[in-house]
Every structure is written in C-alpha cells, then in structure tokens.
Length: 389
Image (cartoon, rainbow, N blue to C red):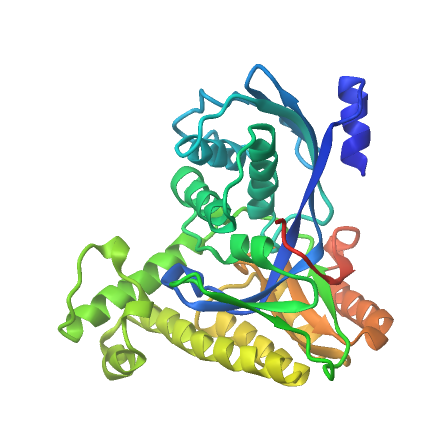
C-alpha cells in the first residue's frame, strides 16, 4: 500500500500495523436512517487503509494521501469545537472514545483512500479505521455496536452532520457475499446470503468528478424537513409528542401520513412520501434478495433513485444525468445515487458479462453531457466485502 511506503518515507521505519475499513453502498434504504427506517447495504472491496504505529506520548499525528493538511492533537486535549478540516472526524471519535475509556497512547500514521471522495461514506470509513487503530494501541475492545454509536455521535455532535447509522453499520457488520438488512430503530440486523441461483453481479461505481462535503450541502435541511413532517403529523393526529429533535417518521404510522399529508407543506409531504415508500422498498428488496431475484432487487434500487430525485429532491445535474444513463444501459440490474446525492457518485449492480460495454457506454454518454469533467470522471468495478470487524 502507498500509505505504508509513505510511512517509511516519513518515519524512516516500517509501520507496526495496517488496518482497513471498506466503503459501502446502499442500493435500497436511502435517507431512511435519519428517521429510524430500515436499510439494505453492502460493503465493497475498496476503502480506507491506515498504516500506523503507537505514540507513547499520547499525540495523534496523521497525514493523508488525499489531503494536504496534517492532523495533530493529543488524545487528552481535544478542541471542543471542530476545526473545519478532514481531521474533525478523527478528533470527534477520539473525544467519544475518551468519554468511555481512558486513553494513554496516540498514533502516528498515514491514511489512504482507494477511490475518489464522495458518496461512498468515506468520512465514516476514515472515522472507523482511525477508531479501530486507536482502540488497538490503547488495548480497548469495544463491541461492534459501540464502534458504530461512537462514530455516529462524533459525526452528529462534533462534525455537525445529521446523519443516521447507515454508513457505519454497513462498514462494520457487512459480510462478503451477503446483503445487510438492518432496522436502524432496534439495531436488529440480518446478513442475507447470496442465493445459490442468483445471477452473478458486481458493484459499479460511477464517480461524477464533482466533490462536496455533506456538512456544506442541503443534507441537514432534508433531515429537518422530514422531522418537521413527523412533528406536524403527530400534532394533526392528536398523538403525544415532545421535543422537535425527538420527532421521527418511524413513530408515525403510514395511515396517519395518508390521512393528513394534504395539510403538510409540499416539501415536508414529499420528504415523508420518500421515507414511507422507501421503507416498503427495503422490505420488498430484502425478500427479493432472499429469493435470489436480482432483477427485482435492482428494479427497486432504480425506483429508490427516482424517489430520491422527485420526493427527496436531491441530485446535482451531473448525478441525475449519470442516473439516467446507467439505468438505461444494458447489463445494469439497477442503481441510484450513492450517499446523500448532492455530489459524488452513482452505484449500480451490474452483470459482469457486460462490464466492458457498460464502462464504455456510460463514460461516452456522460462526457458528451459534461466534457469538462474528462479526466475527473471515473468508473470502478467492485466486489462485496467484509466489514471492518
């Protein structure tokens, strides 16, 4: 790995350990976890590597092959407010870990991502791979759910992104050749094995060539709009309700939404429409996967993408174009935006027999629409993978 080579160049010695956290895709279940919905997901065999060694003085000193600024802080002296750089995820998980366990040792390391940034939960992967390394040097052995909870809390409370637990759960629980089916309310999950009669597939990643962070996008606004819908529906139906931040669509039966949706502001109604229909798609998708019906699962993923555009109202012009091209390309079972959908990439489940033709067709059509992105647009073919633990 390049991170190991860079570590040797910087510190004039080999790193003592190397850890890896995969990226994830969520073919069905987009924008659900913020309201405690259900999701289906896969980890892929691309992700974040970290080459590191312990530092006995408690200092964390990391450089990234993707970002210029080096991260440096002490495990017992974390700034209480974020610094607005990539290392906020590191500081955030260190702070959360230190609230539960005493920290003595820091790490020196080099971190490396294997795909362009945007849409694959790279921020969650960075936080988790660092969290695992920090636990290792401090002889801490948290449960998988603890890892997820600390990483989510760091992203919500320190970085300021109102995300749910989809990303971290996929990156922790996933198993190669299985589909993760997770209820984000109860944390109950199932790893559904690939059916022996299922058609072969790969995960195609189409990177748009455009990057943007979630905190700077309309991601938080969409979450607030869906929460506002839940709060209003509870009031209309005479249900008990408390604080606004504790309002979730999962607490509101769908029949209540159908009864009162005409009273909601249009944007709130559309966010709720996406959430309720996505909840249904996830359940049908899990059963389709269980039966080995990849065509049906792919169709539902494409339908999820359509709802994300129309009801969740996400998608840059680049991603909408990518979605249209790939879902009309032979050999694509189905797909959608990956991640929040404002910038980044699209993912698709594809028939490996069409891999070359899909790459050629999508590349040609996309660059016709956005010729300035030549050299930035890229296609990556991936396999399913195990999670970090």
